[in-house]
Image 1 (tube, rainbow, N blue to C red):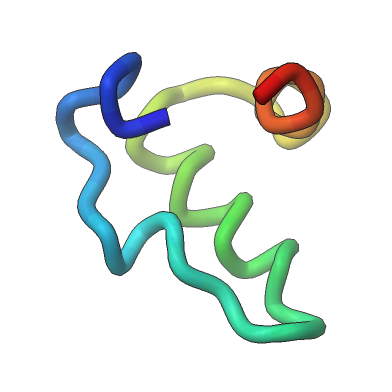
Image 2 (cartoon, rainbow, N blue to C red; image 1 turned 180 degrees about the horizontal axis):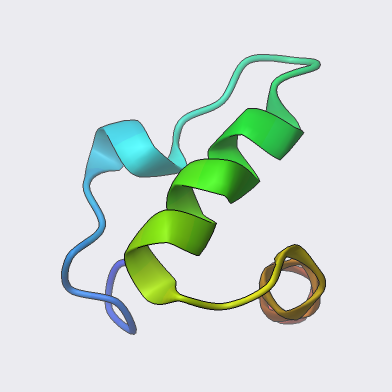
Length: 45
């Protein structure tokens, strides 16, 4: 994800158990993509 979206930091990509949606919210703000789009991209990794 960091290679694809240079604006992302390690902190943006860290999440604790139960905080996946919080991480997706941060990614959503920085990438402009929907949570569904981001989940699909993460699943492909």
